[in-house]
Image 1: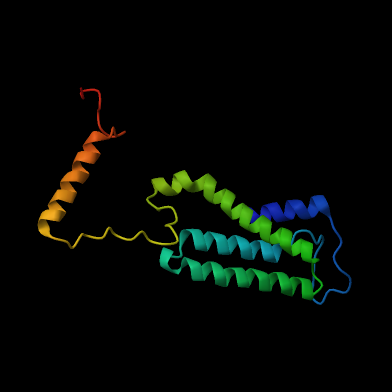
Image 2: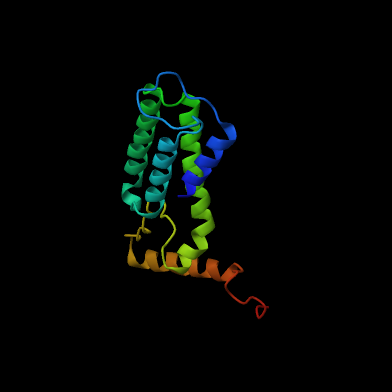
Length: 159
């Protein structure tokens, strides 16, 4: 809905003629491509909100190929100029990112986490050395942390 509103507004404002002899039924205005905008919009929304982080790299690769295939097909069918399909992809992805940004506080309030990072952080590696060396390293680390002021600790009571 969000990208279609932008696409139809741009179609009426720009009113660019389509290429001659289209191989499919077309309506008014060539700029931007609504098919490509819808594909890019859907790809970004699904990738940002539904696809788990471990599968996201494959999702972006496959969905980029899908969007490029839609761009090629709309150009090959003489329904759009190549620049129309590029503008459609930009419009669809941009509308999805804008709506995601606008609704991020609501999503957070509903308990829907923001998209996880592409690569999950690795857990810290436990030192497998001599037990006394491990204890000394832990003590050094604790002394270091205590010596640094932290935003979370009240440092006003320190001498």
